Image (tube, rainbow, N blue to C red; front, side, top):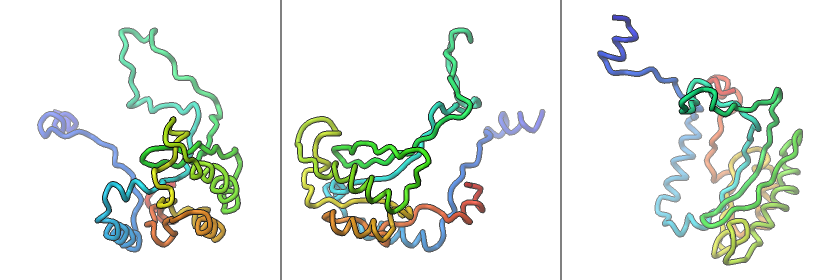
Length: 201
C-alpha cells in the first residue's frame, strides 16, 4: 500500500493547502482586544449607526482555478468556455454600506493613486457626502437614507494611508457627526516587511 493510500484509506486524512494569514504583531493584537472590550456591550441598535466603508480591487475576466472549478455536464462539448483576455483589466472601487442602504460605487480611474487628496476630494466630499445627505425613507438601497438617525452616525474606515492622512481626518472632523479616528480602529494590515515574511506579497 502506498503512503498516499495509507493516509487516505487507513488514517482518513486528506491533503489541504495551508491558508495564508498575516502575522499579527503584539501591538495589533492589543489594539483588537482594546476595540473589542470598548464595544462589547453594544447592542444591535448601536451597530446600526455605523457606516462601513472600504476600497477593493477587482480583476475583469479573471480565470478561475482549474483545479477546483468544475462544471457538471453529460458531455464536454456542451460546456460553456471561460472567456479570457491577454491582459485583463483591473478596477478599484470604493463603497459604503449601512444596515439598510448602500452608497453608489465610486470607480477609481486606472492609473490613479488613492492618496489623501484624491480620497478627500473625490470620494469623501463626493460619493460619500452624497450618500450621507440622502433623506428618503423609502426606495431602493441606493436611494433611501443610510440610517434612520443620520445625526448619530459613526463613519468607519480602516488604517490605509489615505484614510489616516491629516486632511482626511480634518474633513471627517468637520463634516461627520462622529467617526472612528485612526487611533481607534485596530490595524488590520501587516507592514510590507511582515507581508514578505508571511509570503503575502
